[in-house]
Image 1 (cartoon, rainbow, N blue to C red):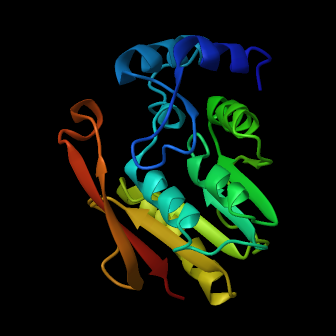
Image 2 (cartoon, one colour):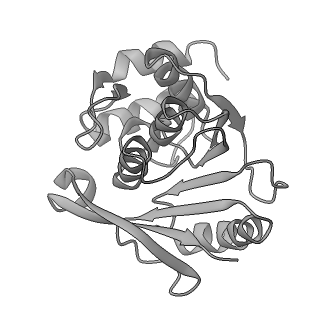
Length: 215
């Protein structure tokens, strides 16, 4: 990770509270285009993925809300926040008494944002750097928010998530109606409506459903 990652994040974001989880304060961007362009310049790469870490996406908000409300029990459990973005669900799990929390991301800026956000909220979250898909089970609960937005991504992760479920992990997927959500092997356990911005979602609310992934 480049040493100025934390400085980049604090310079291009502001501390804000997600609509559904006001107990948590994160370093968030107010607009997507400026931070996307700045990320390309900082990473010296073009056509990078959007800076997902800089926004509190609806899936992670609902996971965090259900964890803090007790609808998802993580107390004493080892938890993975997969494709964690800025680590909102991971922070909620740590606050709710998880024994260990890891947040997995492949974006170096996301890893830095997770560290900043966890420290700001006074919790311990470990970074699981790189692509953990295919890793052997070492978690009791796996949280996956808003991950079925592209066919390649869904095809890459779902067999692994199902294997983790078969090996005894509780695997929870939060989806706000993305096109590539699998049609089978999911059991609904809850849903929430989340305020969103038109810049990101082209609408004002998203209804997010939490599914338990079945083996």
